[in-house]
Length: 112
Image 1 (tube, one colour):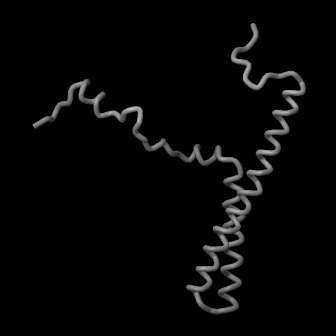
Image 2 (spheres, helix red, strand yellow; image 1 turned 90 degrees about the vertical axis):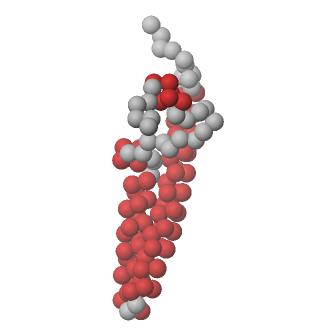
Image 3 (cartoon, rainbow, N blue to C red; image 1 turned 180 degrees about the vertical axis):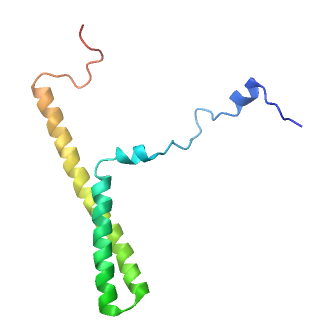
C-alpha cells in the first residue's frame, strides 16, 4: 500500500542522535588496528603447534582441537596486550619528544 516513500519519510526512518548504529566494517578497518596482524599470526602458529602436539601425544582429535583453540585465543590475547602496550609507549614517547621540541599537540591550523 505504501510503495513510494516520500523524502520526509526516508529522513524520519534514519536513526536519531541517541540511537546506536552499526559501524561500517571493512577489511581496511582491520588493517588499521595496531598489532592485530602479528597477534593473529602468532595465535595461529601457537594454536597449530599445540594442537598438533596434543594430537600426537593423546591421539584424540577433540582434545587436540580444544587445546588448539584455547592456545590460539591465549597466545593472541597475550601477544596483542604486550604489543599494544609497546605501541602506546612508543606513541607517548614520540608525543613527549614533539612537545619538548616545541610542537603543539593540536595546532588547530597550519601557518601560512
